[in-house]
Each structure stands twice: as structure tokens, then as C-alpha cells.
Amino acid sequence: MTNTDILLEDLEDVLDDATSVPMSKKSLVDIEKIKTIIEDIRLNTPQETKQAKAIVDSRNTIIDEAKKEAADIIAEAQAQARELVARDQITQTAQAEAADIIAKAHEEGDTYIHNAQNQASEILGNATTQANDMVTSAQNKSREMLTAVNNYADDTLLAIDDSLYKALADVRRIRQGIMNKKNGQ
Image (cartoon, rainbow, N blue to C red; front, side, top):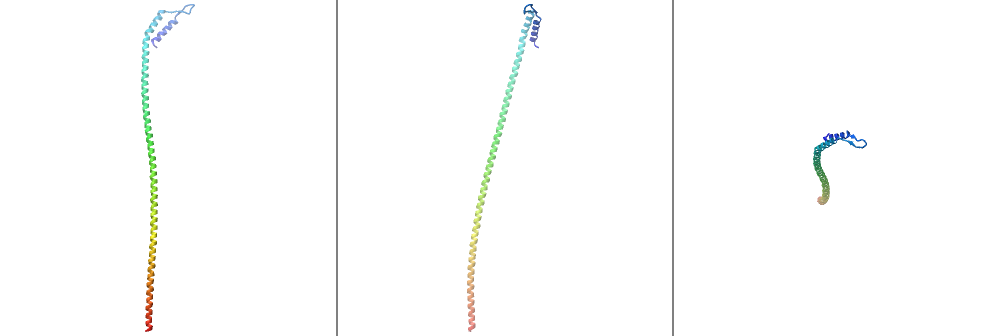
């Protein structure tokens, strides 16, 4: 309890102890006592006002410091939030780029596989065509050679047959001649 509060209670006590004037609403009080209490209140008020002002100033300083600290905390939190957002954006960007790279790699891989399959099919088709052409050519050559061999064999057999026929005819003639000579002798 402050001095002013005590002095105000003393003032109330003086007023409570006042004597009533009969037939009026007025009371008799000890003016000297009241003046002394008022003087003491005046003397104590500047000191208490100074204390209150110091408390208010201290409160304002504390509030200002708290506001500054809160602003610093908010600024730091915002900076951290921006950093986290930036990191998240960098991560998201990196993930998106990685997904694009993977998709492109799959696409290029599929294209390479498709092209390789087409080339393999084309090479296989060309090889099959060449092999078929070679087989056909070999079969044609084989037929030609077989035909040539058959023709040669036929010609040779005909020539041998002619030779044998002539030789047989000669042998018959000679034999006939020998028989004629033997009979005519």
C-alpha cells in the first residue's frame, strides 16, 4: 500500500469522525487535519507519480524490447520459411527435372529399342532375302549343272553307244568277213 493510499484512508477517517451540524446536511471537520493530509498527499504524489512514470517507462521499454524481439523472431521465422520454401522449390524443381530426364531417357530408350528392332528386322529381312536369293541361285545353278551333266552324260552315252554300235558293226563285218573267208576258202 502506497503512502497516498494511507493518507487517503486517513482523510476518510477524518470525514467519518466529523460531527454533524443539526438540522443540516453539513458536518464539522478538523480543517487543520485535512489540510495536513492534503499537503502530505501533495508531497507524496510527485514521488509516487515518479515511481508510476518509472514503472510505465519500464513497462514501455519492456514492451518495446518485446516488440523488437518479436519482430526479430518473426523476421527470422520468415527468413527460415523463405529458405525452407526455396529449398522445397529447389527440391521440387530438381525432382521435376529428374522426372523429365527419366521420362526423356525412357522415351529415347524406347526409340533406340524401336529403331534397333526395326534395323534388326530389316537386316533379318535382307539376310533372309539374300539367303533365299542365294538358295534360288544355287538351286538354279544346281539345275543348270544337273542339266549340263545329264546332257553331257546323254551325249557321252550316245557317243559311246554310237562307238559301240560302230564297233559292233565292225565286229560283225569282220566276223562276216571271217565267216565268208572260211566258207569261201
